[in-house]
Length: 385
Ligand SMILES: *Cc1c(COP(=O)(O)O)cnc(C)c1O
Image (cartoon, rainbow, N blue to C red; front, side, top):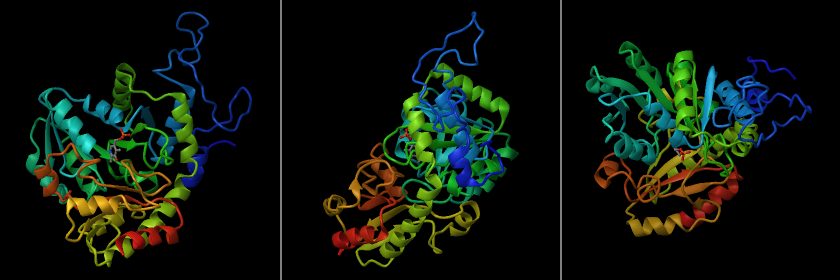
């Protein structure tokens, strides 16, 4: 089969980068478990010199992920954080970044604890009205870092509006597309310069790999990031690359079911007397539902809930009482998970700051998996009553 870049999403997910192995015809990309490559004479080789810089299994995966985002280049990293770290290393002391006030806890921790002390300034602002970004812009601003939908309160940020501001000021826009996945949202097409993924989540999809990725169209920007990638070395191994290649082959099927199950679970929770609030961008009364409809193809399986009149002890008890939903950090795998952001994924954000954006002690986040919806609803009914 020869790959055609006009294929639709599912065909791309299965075939992009997955050419039959030239030496044997193996249909699955081999796991090139090697650290180095033999050279004919110094510098004369087949494009592979040392595996931190390049590995054929990883290269196949990078081709695949680039195709899913309709991007020109992709780089895979040993974690989502490793990929974000590379983006911030494009900056220098004195530079400023504008980002959201409801981002992944680990992103907040890296920005404030690692890069702020090195002289890069971060503004954590409400981005639900993108025009607010202009209020924080100055001559030192070099990057807008957007996460949408946000984790865990499912705010929707208008990517097109952010890209207009970035372009008008000649600065970069990076979008963390982990929650939406390329199946639901393609930030490059909406004007972003860099798309970032925690591949650990939906792309890998089976809770068995930690990995990150960046997707870039601009050749010069790609070269700068590829230089950081190789120089700083947060590159993934071939076995993990193989597992993600395999996981991505069903991304479109899994996402269809995540969206279907997510919608049923959100509707069930919305009218439940023990639930005070449900955060899910598919509700018509979600504050940015219209933007979600414009920039996403569906609304996904991530849902957060606030329990009515529940103490932190009540909340812990509920979080630990499910049978189908497992209490764990992470998201996006085939199995349903429940998480207590205040003490788990977002514990590194100070209490006042997280509570200001709604990450309260009685908030729980659900990653709705691809099990049968009847069993998921029965589990929720049994625990919530
Ligand atoms: C998990 C996550 C990350 C970090 O990715 P790792 O693979 O865990 O390093 C970044 N952003 C979001 C939105 C995430 O959910």
